[in-house]
Image (tube, rainbow, N blue to C red; front, side, top):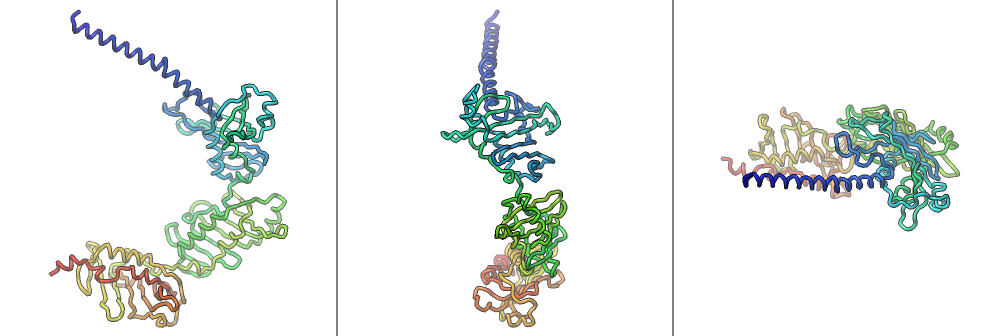
Length: 497
């Protein structure tokens, strides 16, 4: 054997030894440690649904369990909840929607809960009494399934998991809680947060949303209240709101959003007991407020509100009905006023009714004695040009800013409707303002600026697209780029022959 062959054999032997040491290190040391860590982690979990070292179908981490049934028994009573059609419901002692946030919080606690320590391997009755487990302070039973690769497994018995947990008293030393599991005699301690999330009356597990509607999803709102009645509607959810009863007019979208947002603040804070229900339902036959919300998707949502006197005190109640759901609850009395809105409050304060795409010409009329400024948009390039008093290229971003501001321009307040004499507000054909026209010169919208509002020097009278006299802020007008120096591209004008 020559020297080269000897070196090759030596290298091969060294490689085998190194490989053997590596395998020994993994199988002899690392793998047992890893297995022990996995076993310990599984044993520490209160609701262990996976065997130590178990992997998912793709070889990765196993999927989280999907909880489907919960039973909580506490001094306040027993509540049973079930996941039906991806929605949690209270099924006992009443049938009602469950509060998703409350249920999710409980599920997170159950899924993440770990034992802090094992106190007793074989507790005596005296031990159980001492830890408050002889007569548990709370009992929770949870059912879940481990989903397969496609997310299924609800009906597969091999994937079902169940656990019953008994909670005792609080450990005053660190705030932890004593507990046991069904089928396991040992006494453990766990984080006290699990005890806090369980201590709820059935009503606290219930959904409390009285007005289950969102403004973006609505097509029609019908309201009849103590003082006012109105109907708002729109053709599609991306169209503006119109009032159709008691008058026809464009509605202020922000006021509609404000009303609907305010409704969400008034949730149920109590539920009447069966002895009260008959009297409340009788009062609801002649409600103080009734509203119907027509959604784009799904059936209508109907809400009725009334007041009932109990022990000399008037209390407000609401009955909400939608799809197959019914919610009878006590609400804040202020909720009776949220929908009692005067129709004129919905009047759109938008000064001009137009869209930027409609405008091809702009005529700015200054105060008497000033020069009229006219701009046109080139049909081929879409660029704006100043026509008078000095021809030249316009500052495109300034024109865009002007049109955008005018499209959003709102009055600070509304005055007289359809005045017989606009002149008393300083508004006539020679008033300063802005005329927006299409490509043919037809006026799309016009803003007239009048005199100062008496008693309010910060505002001016104005006329726009509506029949009302407008009060507009001087500061808002001053911010509009209406001067030639702001609109004419100076560099372009200087280079012109």
